[in-house]
Length: 187
Image (cartoon, rainbow, N blue to C red; front, side, top):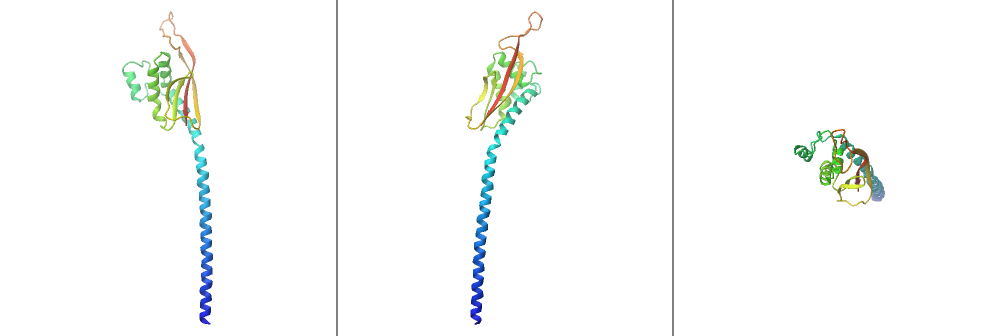
């Protein structure tokens, strides 16, 4: 009888262990489903954020170009242009200088200035460009437009394209206006 009781106790303990194993497996599966759901939901959310990033990036670039003067710039290319006399007005903002090069027909200088002043702000995986009056001055077409295109615009006035300025009343400058300066960023 003692053996029977011991055998039934062992049998009872084995049944309890089986229940514990099934309960543990159920809880592991439930935890896995919850973790998978969280990972899936967060990956969907993470894909939507870059649109906001593009918006801020285009605005920050155009605001930066319109806030920093060429005299304040630490950009090596711009310093070189000041040093060789190509840029004469150190009070121009970088944006105004790009527009001035464009107005004087120096598209290559406008292109290279825009490239040197902006390329390090935009990741290589994104497309980027600078337009003046809907004409491309500089584009980096590394990435085709897959998802979104964001642009920021600023109106600039100054010297009319193809005209020269004068310093006396007999030969006053011809003003242009307005010119739309646009920065486009895309994914």
